[in-house]
Image (cartoon, rainbow, N blue to C red; front, side, top):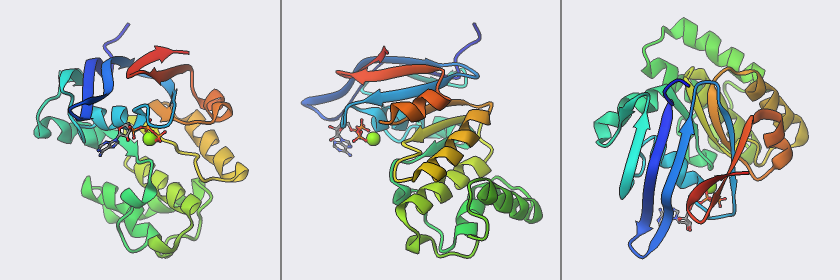
Length: 218
Ligand SMILES: Nc1ncnc2c1ncn2[C@@H]1O[C@H](COP(=O)(O)OP(=O)(O)OP(=O)(O)O)[C@@H](O)[C@H]1O
Ligand SMILES: [Mg+2]
């Protein structure tokens, strides 16, 4: 089998000294893998995703991404460019005044030409059922609309791997179905956190669960 794109190797992690969140936690994500990650509230799912992109660091063990062990902040710059991370809380992700600016921010930052970015924004919003939302004020959107805009921003970056923290939370059946349809057609390796097993059944090839700080197969 090819080398994993992401390899958490016996990772330990804690926010406070006396309470381990992850202990001896290992996970490998290969090209084309579509992993559904479940686990109780507070079991460490978000923390696991944050470790992959270096928003938090392990206290022991190793984080390998795209074939290199990542330890320092500078090691993670490339990781964050190549991995799209949808935050659990869209308010943490959105920061531009309008929807179009928010979705365009990443691609412009990557140096894509403005015309191309404008088309990319229009297409990505339309794919997610948000045609005509370009000039809407981001902070006035509903929770579900914010989640879709945040997802549009992630997808518009054309990442190689997707880490999606509850992408269908707060969405109605129609919007969730649209998101699941899109995700199920993407070729990317992805890790999708969800409490909804019917949603995971539609997109994940493999299901894992966080249990007492470790990843177990379910
Ligand atoms: N910044 C922080 N400082 C201290 N403790 C934290 C912090 N963030 C999370 N925790 C704690 O770490 C544990 C794991 O949190 P995490 O957010 O990773 O869980 P989760 O599985 O994503 O939960 P949920 O299903 O509610 O999203 C929880 O007990 C949480 O209270
Ligand atoms: Mg979480």
